[in-house]
Length: 123
Figure (cartoon, rainbow, N blue to C red):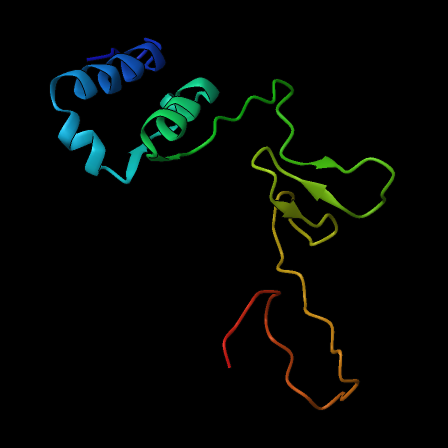
């Protein structure tokens, strides 16, 4: 077990490797591996998917060193993103607040109710 200050990634890799060696039937039935961001590692994610077809459900770490909450997309004035890649719109009143983007009214009917966010819906 890793201590609070220990790097969990090597132990996570050993855990997957050992489980595959000792109980390959469990690994072959496994669809997902859920873990906290302490196991966020490109190599581990690739091993899980490429070697075992296990989908990693692991939150990403904030690797921004400067403490910024959002960064502006180059060559734009009003588009920003956070360390997860989520779209955040500056000028929303609160730093780091995210607002869903409104879907355009493609029919031109001003009285039509617009969906709250962009997305795919079934009719």
